[in-house]
Amino acid sequence: MERFGVVMCMGLESGSTSSLKNPPEADNGTSNDLEGLARRPSTPDPSEVGTSYQAQNEENGRWQSGGSSETEKETLLEMAEGRRAAPWFPVEPIWQASEQDALRDEHLRRMLAPAWRVLLLSDGSVTRHLQLLSDFGSVTADCFQMAEIGDDLAGLPPGAELVPGPRVQRQVWLRTADGQPLVYAASWWSAREVRGYLKEVQKPIWVNLSETRAELYRDVQRLYLGFSDELERAFGVPGPFWSRHYVFYHDGRPLTLIYEVFSRSLEQYIGPMHPADKSRTN
Image (cartoon, rainbow, N blue to C red; front, side):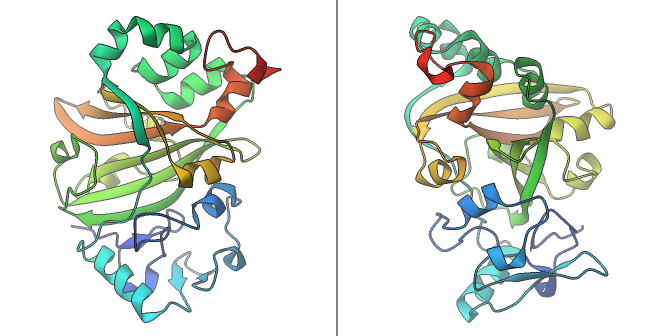
């Protein structure tokens, strides 16, 4: 089985200590670097990463870690060996509901404009919905971290156990053509199968799966409204944020679990979140 280690999605290589790319701050589940990752250009400038800079080897595209403290190196090794999960960034919910309850909730209908309900409750592609509901053109996926996290389920969303371990965790921004981050997404895959479905890690999941002609069923499991200090800094707008998680099934088997958080910046493209609030788009 191919091992990933902790690596950037660019120049993805099988795991080894020399090719590990430091993910967002791993010590306490928060990140001082997430804002920088959200704002970074498609090709990162090593000077923007901080004291534990990452230098890209131009010859083979691998990322090599330099200047790391012994503690940072040990953290990277623990994540590479599956003894520590790489951090990800869920919201702290102030409201949540199952898909079935949300569809029946009249209060939610009054609280969310139709375009936002489509985005959250439809079983279609987020990338395609964003392109259809707005006029900002293309949506690009910026994969900033992909790591093997072993079999540990601690801290993962309900339903992650459906995806066979050991697992790979992938984190991306969905961006406008000019680089503005609109959606944060984390997903979990079987390490044994992920390469067969994500052949081009810098493309959106929907594009990758469409190219394989995979027959898919999306099971939206839960909706959330909540806060995240890290994502507020990354998106550059205050919360709360709407989010959801769902499972993709292929041939009746769970393929991946995906957790998405939507920036309030989307209001300037698809209209106000709340039907009565017209001021946000003016």
